[in-house]
Length: 344
Image (cartoon, rainbow, N blue to C red; front, side):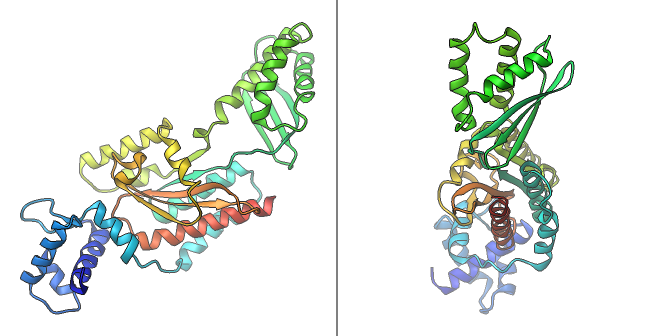
């Protein structure tokens, strides 16, 4: 494109991102630095439409950028400014207190991102691959118990579950002792297969109640310690409250239904393995967002060894302010990485 085409294209996209309405040639003539006629601008817009960068929703309407046009704008013309001081303060205030566990911290990350950006946030929590040091079962009542895992790096996690009927303090101790005899030097993913084999080979040595307790305790971890469970979604209402046509709201609802059912989450997980830095996915460029036409701005975060361990991102309508969202996501990812590095 020549300079005039770039100016017209940039003006159309920036106006669309600001208000979501099609842009007409008369409107553009008032905003362009170069004084040109509406007819000239109209011809340029027709050329841009022929190139697939603009589209006209209706015959008599102005133009809006296509997904290809938005991609070209993001890659070549987007101007990303510094993080706004007010946005930085809100994020710092929300995440600054490091007195909570990892789950609480990441939940606050999601709340901060959705609150500051007015979009919906996705936070991918890291897998915990440290070796297990100790397992304990704690009774909380006749129908409630807690399985507690202490890792070699000092990290502690617990899960609430319903124990098999008839459990006694003795059977719970036996179950914990059996597990602790097997876990030394092993991670949680290593332990699962080993325990199943040991239960089969030592059935005569293990009390029936203890065996049931072990299986129940492991079942709650297998149900929750999955890749899908690592994805935290916050701020759904921000998108549902966006003014738009009924079919647009239906597409957004479908997107969140898929997220809640953890469909196609591997698409999001894969993003964390493609290198550091902020990435922008628009509409059909990502399988997860192809139906809703939404966008995703995502950035991985790293631990003290500079290894990517998770990601933070924001979902929104395609016309949101990319220039503002990118530094927010980038700063949040760096802050989360620093918090994990400080913990380790």
